[in-house]
Image 1 (cartoon, rainbow, N blue to C red):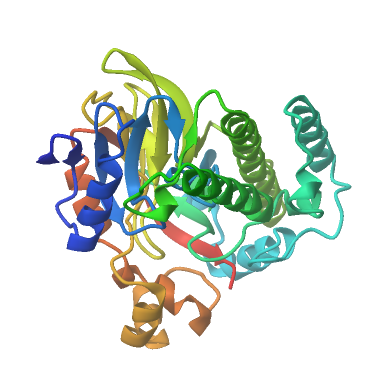
Image 2: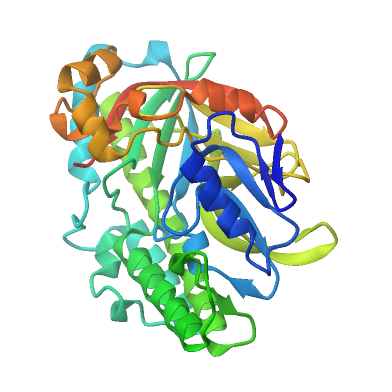
Length: 390
């Protein structure tokens, strides 16, 4: 751990100057208590750094959660082992998943008639009513978004652990409806800070003050979007399980299920005070807490348990973290480079994924070494099937 300032502690051995400066600016906000914790996978974000943990008293920065509210991971450990899989037919499974789970930005379900989907939507409708929220005011298609993956670094994978046990693994968040909720509240915070003549180091660090109507409206809608993200992952996992069952002709037994956010806010107690803890690209690593830390496309992922490190605010990294922007990755790497990185992994061979090449990300092994006092690694997963949206 590196003490950059009294208000900024870092676990990142790979840290660009611009990222450090951005995190320093966040740490100077007067309501930060006790300090910002910078995770090993930290990189530049909008307003607040991706891979930062930001505890606040009496205020919330909407950009400290980001625009993909509730983004996170879900994993299922199955009863299967590598020997149970028809490895030469992995393409059939990939194609089935691609046909069952809507992929890519703006691609949603045609209907919501599935049994689980309907039940989940009913629950979200009820919680929205309790929160005084009409999700359709943000996205009229929000119901059709449940059970959809998105694009970018969101993915679905089939992986094997160190004992060749089969895991199902996916990464996604609150989709378009969560993005619209986040964008709205970031703009509200910016308008209010301008109205009150508050000088900010970055306008995306605009905040909402606890006790105001705008603050509580954000909290209610944030919590709903986090619930949507959780159910979105669960719905997609149900569909992936169905595909695996059809592929193998055998029911899947879920021996372990882990579903965790890495872009979210909760009230927690740290250093003697109740704070609003915003994790933007970080997971809860309280003692014994199970978590998921994915690598980049084609690299290892990790199933972990938290060590409850109080100085890190019981947090750990959420993944590899980008080293190259998407545009720089496209200028630097080729589709042949991607093919070499994805050898032995079943994936859709397209140049659309070049900006997701592992070399565009930090080395996940370095990230995990930096996180050694934050989490205990329980399982190391290697991909055998990868599904992504354009």
